[in-house]
Image 1 (tube, rainbow, N blue to C red):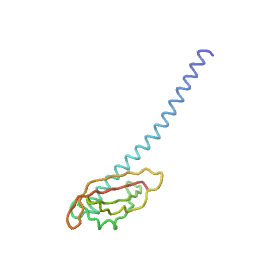
Image 2 (cartoon, one colour):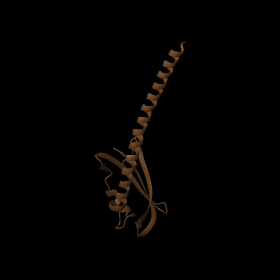
Image 3 (cartoon, rainbow, N blue to C red):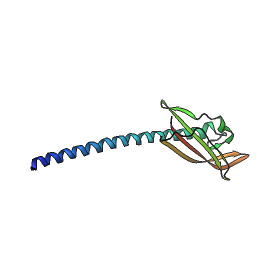
Image 4 (cartoon, rainbow, N blue to C red):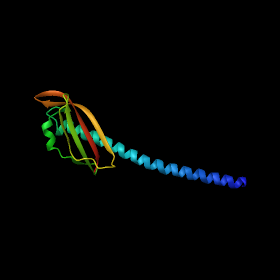
Length: 134
């Protein structure tokens, strides 16, 4: 083989490899951006639940009896999002998980935060949230 033909062949292989790497990295970047947006919106949902929907008058002091009244589907930025939530106190008593099951093969975001639960008196607990795009 002539050196000129080898140079053209190597240049072609280099361009092909570069193009394939660029295409695969673009798809991965889109996936990562989508996961970041889901994570950010899930954090805002969790804050809203802890400060408004489940709050017993004080942020992050939650009333477990308010869980059944939640709507587990919400519109954020023009897109629908679904979630499921659960509460657990320090003794292991658990409320939930309440809400629909996540669909298979979808990206989900799971968060766990410390809260106080109002059972006759405030007790330490935690709240779990799993969210996904509907």
